[in-house]
Length: 407
Image (cartoon, rainbow, N blue to C red; front, side):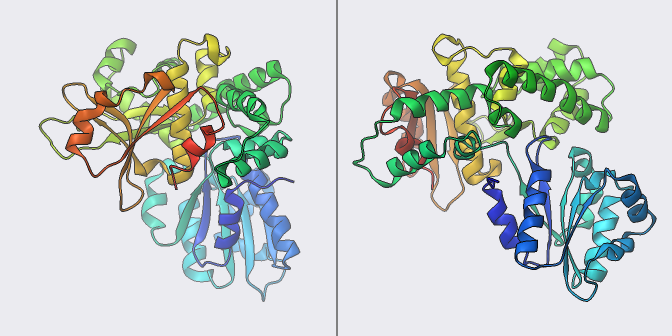
């Protein structure tokens, strides 16, 4: 079975004392990761137990007393890896993990997954400080998309392009077709592995209608219609500044409700909001974030638009959202900002993941790149190099341009 990139990080963390917590949207493959870790532990002859808390009998045992977990250990005298799936079903998951860590971390290493309801809980953040490391599982990257869809040969070709600057590929057109498919249908594993386009759309609608609905229910949202309407508006405004007053007026609901909905969408790993980069408080906007969806397939499903790139009116926004996802995979969302002045000058992304900053402007077509439009930014921040990412024309240097710039 093909392993996601995050598997290696989780594998390395098995030797650490901290508990491992896997976060991510529903249907991104968290349970599959746990099962692959179980196989790995058995191969390494590490004592391991897999506990799915959708099993009511196991759930009742652990709710009765967290220490009942020790009864499930296959070798009581050896440190055991406990893989706990759907930990949010526990009555008090934070206390469960805290007690086991504080009293039995020499005997047991917990690797747990849970839904958004668990991570919204303030107790999770407060009581587990220093006791856990969080790993976020996104939907598939383009590399994972190629492997899961049975096109590992194209991934090898892409890697060869990155390693050899003079290499000319005969498969560029095939890579372009797959890249467009990835942008349109996104990276949910069940979508990636489905070959039929109409069935991809049907499954995306199921994720939109069934699994997002579960997020809504578990988060205590009462006005489901307003939540969905906000979600659709945000999908149509990816890369735009989030103005809560405007959204409140459009949807005719309170600002506080908009704030609450945005928090839930972030905690459910459907959207990310990036903050402005600024040094001059008077000239640069410093308050409102920009929004992006964490899967382009779900974005297109909310908009009911699966048209090819060539005929889309939103191809620029879709491309910018795709670049955001590449950046999120590489450096995490916390290291991504944007720059904008009160006069309307803007640069799409400012990255702060290393000592040296870097700026990126995203354009769909190469002929849209006009360096003089960004003179204010380059003069204000001469120490921050500005790069341009374009999709069209899709040529030999596409992957070098996108991937080698972000290390």
